[in-house]
Amino acid sequence: MKALRRILFLLMCLASASAEATTIEMNVNGLVCAFCAQGIEKQLRKFPATSDVVVSLEQKLVAVALKDGQDIPDSELRRALTNAGYTVKSIERTQTPIADVRERLRQRKP
Amino acid sequence: MSRWFIALGGACALAGSMIVMAKPIAFAGGYTVMAEYGAGTMEEMQLFYAPRYDFSFGGGYLELNSDETTETRYVSYARLNYLVRRWNLDDAQANIYIWGGLGSATGNRFAGSVFSQNAGAQADYETRRVYASFKTDLQRSADFSHRIDTLQLGLAPYKHEYGGVATWFLVQAREYTGGIHRGAETALLVRLFKGGTWVEAGITNGGKLQAMAMFNF
Image 1 (cartoon, one colour):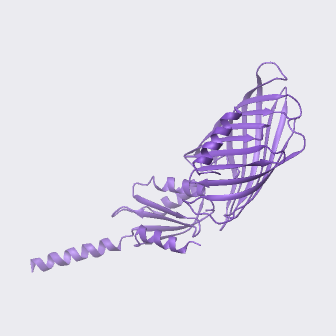
Image 2 (image 1 turned 135 degrees about the vertical axis):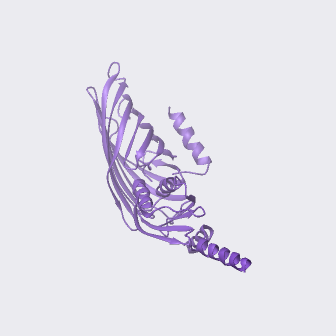
Image 3 (image 1 turned 180 degrees about the horizontal axis):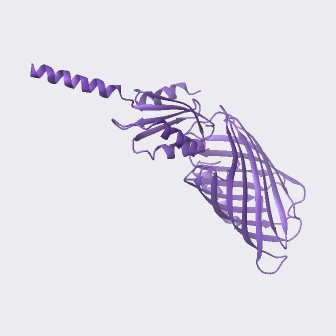
């Protein structure tokens, strides 16, 4: 019985962890040059919760990979992008690993 | 001085990371170093730091050699740049910048060092395929006054991506006032940039080298 409870507890923990967002994807206006991307990347890497940043000019997308169990509030993200000089259109949290986002962007390249 | 600019441009070209008109503010928390060789008439170096995305400060050095006379001017200045307005559009960005500064000038048509003032503005519009900008830059003192107006129109043969090399082909038209250069000077330029490095080089209608290098970090 105890073993069953432990297994159930572990499964619940795993389910809870997997429901956490691993990547934040933001659509950003004004992204037209490498300098824009460089400034944005610099701002977002300042967050302790950031483990990686991917920027796509083609998709107007900025993706932030989060460290395990950590998050960055939307308000902080909007402030960072505004302070970098850009306009955030939307923010979406996904469980897609950043490597998959990178691969998706690579395949969509013209 | 001229040799320094040529060497810098050459080194950048060799590094494979050549140069859009330089923006006076790159990004918040960033430094901008810029050097331009303007066809033997104008040479300029600048260093700016931007504590915010809409404001930067720093200084520069400008050397002018008149091609109408033997007049030369050397101006060292401190300057503030301000982004008045930015439009972040779906596939484009447009900006209006202004700046002002104070400095010290020497030259061979007046004695000693004189107090000088600097003011200017820039408007630009950029997509990933089209670029247009106009810049006007005034330097004046009790002994001289000149303005350099620069128009750039550019086309990119492909849409570059972050991390890759961006290539632009540009036409530049420049006019000097104050007896520096008679008539408009035009130039055809190639601009390459990657990451925080951009370099542009080309040739003027007078057959002279026009080059610029800029580093953002």
